[in-house]
Image (cartoon, rainbow, N blue to C red; front, side):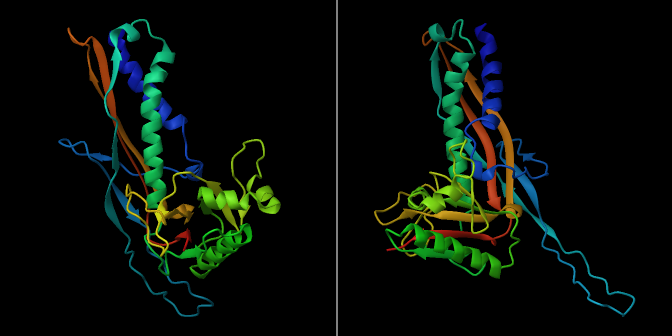
Length: 295
Protein backbone atom coordinates (compact mmCIF):
# COMPACT_ATOMS: atom_id res chain seq x y z
CA UNK A 1 0.00 0.00 0.00
CA UNK A 2 1.23 3.53 -0.73
CA UNK A 3 1.21 4.54 2.94
CA UNK A 4 3.89 1.91 3.59
CA UNK A 5 6.27 3.35 1.01
CA UNK A 6 8.10 5.83 3.31
CA UNK A 7 9.24 3.06 5.68
CA UNK A 8 10.21 0.79 2.78
CA UNK A 9 12.16 3.53 1.02
CA UNK A 10 14.07 4.54 4.15
CA UNK A 11 14.97 0.94 4.98
CA UNK A 12 16.13 0.30 1.44
CA UNK A 13 18.28 3.44 1.33
CA UNK A 14 19.88 2.52 4.66
CA UNK A 15 20.71 -0.94 3.27
CA UNK A 16 22.06 0.38 -0.03
CA UNK A 17 24.25 3.01 1.65
CA UNK A 18 26.21 0.25 3.38
CA UNK A 19 26.25 -2.37 0.61
CA UNK A 20 26.61 -0.55 -2.72
CA UNK A 21 28.93 1.96 -4.39
CA UNK A 22 31.78 1.40 -1.96
CA UNK A 23 35.20 3.03 -2.14
CA UNK A 24 37.77 0.22 -2.20
CA UNK A 25 40.43 2.40 -0.61
CA UNK A 26 38.41 2.41 2.64
CA UNK A 27 37.77 -1.34 2.71
CA UNK A 28 38.65 -2.92 6.05
CA UNK A 29 38.96 0.37 7.94
CA UNK A 30 36.75 -0.04 10.96
CA UNK A 31 34.33 2.52 12.28
CA UNK A 32 35.51 4.48 15.29
CA UNK A 33 34.18 2.93 18.48
CA UNK A 34 32.70 6.17 19.79
CA UNK A 35 29.21 7.37 20.62
CA UNK A 36 27.52 9.75 18.19
CA UNK A 37 26.08 12.85 19.86
CA UNK A 38 23.05 14.28 18.05
CA UNK A 39 22.12 17.90 18.67
CA UNK A 40 18.38 17.94 19.46
CA UNK A 41 17.85 21.24 17.61
CA UNK A 42 20.04 20.93 14.50
CA UNK A 43 20.55 17.13 14.15
CA UNK A 44 24.29 17.84 13.90
CA UNK A 45 26.20 14.60 14.52
CA UNK A 46 29.39 14.92 16.58
CA UNK A 47 31.91 12.53 18.10
CA UNK A 48 34.72 12.68 20.66
CA UNK A 49 37.82 11.25 18.99
CA UNK A 50 40.50 9.95 21.38
CA UNK A 51 44.00 11.14 20.56
CA UNK A 52 46.37 8.27 21.25
CA UNK A 53 49.47 10.42 21.42
CA UNK A 54 50.91 9.04 24.65
CA UNK A 55 54.06 6.95 24.20
CA UNK A 56 55.88 5.68 27.29
CA UNK A 57 59.68 5.78 27.42
CA UNK A 58 61.31 2.39 26.90
CA UNK A 59 64.19 1.42 29.18
CA UNK A 60 66.94 -0.81 27.82
CA UNK A 61 68.94 -3.01 30.23
CA UNK A 62 67.63 -1.01 33.16
CA UNK A 63 69.22 -1.61 36.60
CA UNK A 64 67.67 1.30 38.50
CA UNK A 65 64.56 0.77 40.63
CA UNK A 66 61.90 1.85 41.31
CA UNK A 67 61.16 2.64 37.69
CA UNK A 68 60.09 6.25 37.06
CA UNK A 69 56.38 6.96 36.60
CA UNK A 70 54.98 8.78 33.58
CA UNK A 71 51.55 10.40 33.63
CA UNK A 72 49.13 9.41 30.89
CA UNK A 73 48.46 12.57 28.83
CA UNK A 74 46.15 11.50 25.98
CA UNK A 75 43.25 13.76 25.13
CA UNK A 76 40.38 13.97 22.66
CA UNK A 77 38.82 16.38 20.22
CA UNK A 78 35.25 16.94 19.08
CA UNK A 79 34.58 16.28 15.39
CA UNK A 80 31.41 17.27 13.55
CA UNK A 81 30.41 14.71 10.95
CA UNK A 82 29.85 15.99 7.42
CA UNK A 83 26.20 16.45 6.45
CA UNK A 84 25.07 15.23 3.03
CA UNK A 85 21.60 16.17 1.75
CA UNK A 86 19.87 15.29 -1.51
CA UNK A 87 17.39 17.44 -3.36
CA UNK A 88 13.76 16.35 -3.29
CA UNK A 89 12.55 13.68 -5.73
CA UNK A 90 8.97 13.65 -7.01
CA UNK A 91 7.29 10.27 -7.63
CA UNK A 92 3.80 10.44 -9.04
CA UNK A 93 1.02 8.50 -7.35
CA UNK A 94 0.32 6.74 -10.67
CA UNK A 95 3.89 5.42 -10.75
CA UNK A 96 3.93 4.54 -7.05
CA UNK A 97 0.68 2.57 -6.91
CA UNK A 98 1.46 -1.13 -6.98
CA UNK A 99 5.20 -0.44 -7.24
CA UNK A 100 7.59 -3.27 -6.48
CA UNK A 101 11.07 -3.15 -4.96
CA UNK A 102 12.34 -2.39 -8.46
CA UNK A 103 10.53 0.93 -8.21
CA UNK A 104 11.95 1.53 -4.74
CA UNK A 105 15.46 0.76 -5.97
CA UNK A 106 14.96 3.08 -8.91
CA UNK A 107 13.92 5.93 -6.64
CA UNK A 108 16.32 5.24 -3.78
CA UNK A 109 19.26 4.21 -5.93
CA UNK A 110 19.77 7.69 -7.33
CA UNK A 111 19.91 9.16 -3.84
CA UNK A 112 22.35 6.46 -2.69
CA UNK A 113 24.68 6.96 -5.65
CA UNK A 114 24.69 10.72 -5.21
CA UNK A 115 25.36 10.56 -1.46
CA UNK A 116 28.07 7.90 -1.69
CA UNK A 117 29.81 9.55 -4.65
CA UNK A 118 29.96 12.81 -2.74
CA UNK A 119 30.95 11.41 0.66
CA UNK A 120 33.79 9.31 -0.78
CA UNK A 121 35.17 12.27 -2.73
CA UNK A 122 35.03 14.27 0.50
CA UNK A 123 36.79 11.38 2.30
CA UNK A 124 39.79 11.15 -0.04
CA UNK A 125 40.04 14.96 -0.04
CA UNK A 126 40.22 14.92 3.78
CA UNK A 127 42.97 12.28 3.72
CA UNK A 128 45.12 14.34 1.35
CA UNK A 129 47.74 16.73 2.75
CA UNK A 130 47.19 20.45 2.26
CA UNK A 131 50.80 21.00 1.23
CA UNK A 132 54.27 19.53 1.57
CA UNK A 133 55.57 19.31 5.15
CA UNK A 134 57.90 16.92 6.95
CA UNK A 135 54.93 15.03 8.41
CA UNK A 136 52.77 15.26 5.27
CA UNK A 137 55.14 14.81 2.31
CA UNK A 138 54.21 15.75 -1.25
CA UNK A 139 56.28 14.40 -4.14
CA UNK A 140 56.12 16.16 -7.52
CA UNK A 141 56.47 14.53 -10.93
CA UNK A 142 56.72 16.31 -14.29
CA UNK A 143 53.79 16.66 -16.64
CA UNK A 144 53.59 13.75 -19.08
CA UNK A 145 55.64 11.60 -16.68
CA UNK A 146 56.56 8.09 -17.81
CA UNK A 147 55.55 4.94 -15.98
CA UNK A 148 59.09 4.74 -14.57
CA UNK A 149 58.90 8.31 -13.27
CA UNK A 150 55.54 7.65 -11.60
CA UNK A 151 56.92 4.51 -9.98
CA UNK A 152 60.05 6.36 -8.83
CA UNK A 153 57.78 8.96 -7.20
CA UNK A 154 56.00 6.17 -5.32
CA UNK A 155 59.39 4.91 -4.13
CA UNK A 156 60.31 8.46 -3.09
CA UNK A 157 57.07 8.72 -1.11
CA UNK A 158 57.90 5.37 0.49
CA UNK A 159 61.21 6.88 1.56
CA UNK A 160 59.42 9.85 3.14
CA UNK A 161 57.17 7.46 5.08
CA UNK A 162 60.25 5.46 6.10
CA UNK A 163 61.87 8.62 7.45
CA UNK A 164 58.73 9.26 9.51
CA UNK A 165 58.90 5.64 10.75
CA UNK A 166 55.36 4.97 9.54
CA UNK A 167 54.78 1.21 10.06
CA UNK A 168 55.19 -0.69 6.80
CA UNK A 169 52.07 -2.76 7.37
CA UNK A 170 49.00 -0.66 6.60
CA UNK A 171 50.30 1.85 4.08
CA UNK A 172 47.78 2.61 1.31
CA UNK A 173 48.10 4.48 -1.98
CA UNK A 174 45.11 5.69 -4.02
CA UNK A 175 46.26 6.40 -7.55
CA UNK A 176 44.86 9.30 -9.53
CA UNK A 177 43.47 8.14 -12.90
CA UNK A 178 46.29 9.75 -14.92
CA UNK A 179 48.97 8.12 -12.78
CA UNK A 180 47.23 4.73 -12.84
CA UNK A 181 46.81 4.86 -16.60
CA UNK A 182 50.49 5.67 -17.15
CA UNK A 183 51.54 2.75 -14.94
CA UNK A 184 49.21 0.44 -16.85
CA UNK A 185 51.14 1.15 -20.06
CA UNK A 186 54.04 -0.77 -18.51
CA UNK A 187 53.65 -4.54 -18.54
CA UNK A 188 55.52 -5.05 -15.27
CA UNK A 189 53.56 -2.42 -13.35
CA UNK A 190 50.26 -3.52 -14.87
CA UNK A 191 50.92 -7.06 -13.63
CA UNK A 192 51.56 -5.75 -10.11
CA UNK A 193 48.47 -3.52 -10.12
CA UNK A 194 46.13 -6.22 -11.40
CA UNK A 195 47.15 -8.81 -8.84
CA UNK A 196 43.49 -9.86 -8.59
CA UNK A 197 42.73 -10.36 -12.27
CA UNK A 198 39.20 -11.60 -11.62
CA UNK A 199 38.01 -8.34 -10.07
CA UNK A 200 39.13 -6.08 -12.90
CA UNK A 201 40.13 -3.50 -10.27
CA UNK A 202 43.52 -2.18 -9.30
CA UNK A 203 44.36 -3.98 -6.08
CA UNK A 204 48.07 -4.75 -6.05
CA UNK A 205 51.18 -3.78 -4.11
CA UNK A 206 53.66 -1.13 -5.25
CA UNK A 207 56.70 -0.17 -3.17
CA UNK A 208 55.02 -1.59 -0.08
CA UNK A 209 51.75 0.35 -0.55
CA UNK A 210 48.42 -1.44 -0.94
CA UNK A 211 47.41 0.25 -4.14
CA UNK A 212 43.98 1.35 -5.32
CA UNK A 213 42.61 3.73 -7.94
CA UNK A 214 39.83 6.29 -7.60
CA UNK A 215 38.40 8.75 -10.09
CA UNK A 216 37.47 11.34 -7.43
CA UNK A 217 40.91 12.20 -6.04
CA UNK A 218 41.50 15.85 -5.09
CA UNK A 219 43.14 18.39 -7.39
CA UNK A 220 46.45 20.12 -6.65
CA UNK A 221 48.16 23.08 -8.23
CA UNK A 222 51.40 22.54 -10.09
CA UNK A 223 53.13 24.05 -7.03
CA UNK A 224 51.76 21.26 -4.81
CA UNK A 225 48.92 23.01 -2.97
CA UNK A 226 45.61 21.18 -2.52
CA UNK A 227 42.51 22.90 -3.86
CA UNK A 228 39.66 23.42 -1.43
CA UNK A 229 36.90 20.85 -1.58
CA UNK A 230 34.42 21.83 -4.27
CA UNK A 231 36.75 24.38 -5.90
CA UNK A 232 36.74 24.41 -9.70
CA UNK A 233 40.16 23.25 -10.96
CA UNK A 234 42.09 25.42 -13.40
CA UNK A 235 43.72 24.16 -16.60
CA UNK A 236 47.01 23.35 -14.86
CA UNK A 237 45.48 21.79 -11.74
CA UNK A 238 45.69 17.99 -11.73
CA UNK A 239 44.35 15.14 -9.63
CA UNK A 240 46.96 13.73 -7.24
CA UNK A 241 47.65 10.26 -5.93
CA UNK A 242 47.07 10.06 -2.16
CA UNK A 243 48.82 7.92 0.43
CA UNK A 244 47.87 7.29 4.05
CA UNK A 245 48.43 4.95 6.97
CA UNK A 246 45.41 2.84 7.91
CA UNK A 247 45.67 3.29 11.68
CA UNK A 248 45.68 7.06 11.28
CA UNK A 249 42.25 7.07 9.59
CA UNK A 250 39.08 7.84 11.50
CA UNK A 251 35.76 6.80 9.94
CA UNK A 252 32.27 7.16 11.38
CA UNK A 253 28.79 6.77 9.93
CA UNK A 254 26.07 8.89 11.49
CA UNK A 255 22.30 8.97 11.18
CA UNK A 256 20.21 8.68 8.04
CA UNK A 257 17.08 10.82 8.04
CA UNK A 258 14.32 10.66 5.44
CA UNK A 259 12.03 13.59 4.66
CA UNK A 260 8.73 12.64 3.07
CA UNK A 261 5.69 14.54 1.82
CA UNK A 262 2.47 12.63 1.16
CA UNK A 263 0.54 13.21 -2.07
CA UNK A 264 -1.84 16.16 -1.86
CA UNK A 265 -5.10 16.75 -3.67
CA UNK A 266 -3.59 18.67 -6.56
CA UNK A 267 -0.08 17.33 -7.04
CA UNK A 268 -0.89 13.67 -6.29
CA UNK A 269 2.79 12.78 -5.95
CA UNK A 270 5.18 11.55 -3.28
CA UNK A 271 8.22 13.69 -2.50
CA UNK A 272 11.25 12.52 -0.58
CA UNK A 273 14.88 13.30 0.08
CA UNK A 274 17.57 12.34 2.58
CA UNK A 275 20.04 13.69 5.10
CA UNK A 276 23.05 11.53 5.95
CA UNK A 277 26.03 12.10 8.26
CA UNK A 278 29.48 10.60 7.64
CA UNK A 279 33.13 11.49 8.22
CA UNK A 280 36.55 10.25 7.18
CA UNK A 281 39.65 12.13 8.31
CA UNK A 282 43.21 11.65 9.50
CA UNK A 283 43.34 11.42 13.29
CA UNK A 284 46.65 13.29 13.27
CA UNK A 285 48.22 15.44 10.55
CA UNK A 286 50.95 12.92 9.82
CA UNK A 287 51.49 9.76 7.78
CA UNK A 288 49.56 11.16 4.82
CA UNK A 289 51.13 12.10 1.52
CA UNK A 290 50.57 12.85 -2.15
CA UNK A 291 52.11 12.54 -5.60
CA UNK A 292 51.39 15.69 -7.59
CA UNK A 293 51.81 16.45 -11.28
CA UNK A 294 53.86 19.61 -11.66
CA UNK A 295 54.41 21.95 -14.57
